[in-house]
Length: 270
Image (cartoon, rainbow, N blue to C red; front, top):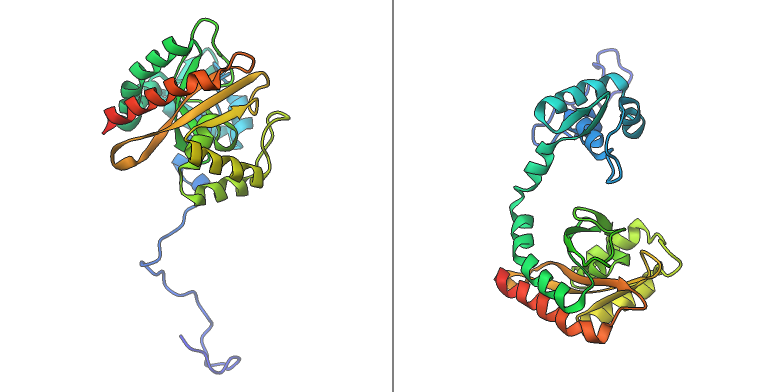
């Protein structure tokens, strides 16, 4: 409606235009049921066995009555379980996670080669994939003396300061590097690379050499080396790594076995 004589008595008041069905309605995630369920499930950390209702309310910022109602429904669905007066994640979540086809296939293909690499090096072996600005560990195997902290299956660590993450970042589109830098390079130890320039130089060297190294950037005393893993049509699918105490890491001796295992996984995926 065009108004050319504002202030005249015969001009009707301005009213909002009718909804345009061609413009999508943007709903705030926290205003939806799923938007409130997600923080409840994500409130649990790997260290949590069970959480009280009060702790769920504190961690989610959702009203107590809403958390209580949704938690009860999640118990019915099997996504949460009761543990006395507390709640814990339900077995149904584990069952559903095992149905994620791509990750399941990657784990099944990678595992035999990871076991061979473990026998050859006697060090901790990881297989990780990229998700958002992190790596997610699909599989981890280690000897009796191996690393059993910091990383865990289904655990996350940043792309910029892990060997698997650097290997993935080096062979990903440059826009991912921009997003990582924009999000901030938080130091985990005094050795963590927090300079975008240094990180870029590292990635250029990784692309040239085909192997990434992270020296005590996540945990003091430990070093990792990783190589990218490619699937059909040379698509980047993840990264394979060896992690060992810094004093014991043998980059020259382990590089060949690491590359051979990654190549085996790649060939099996094609």
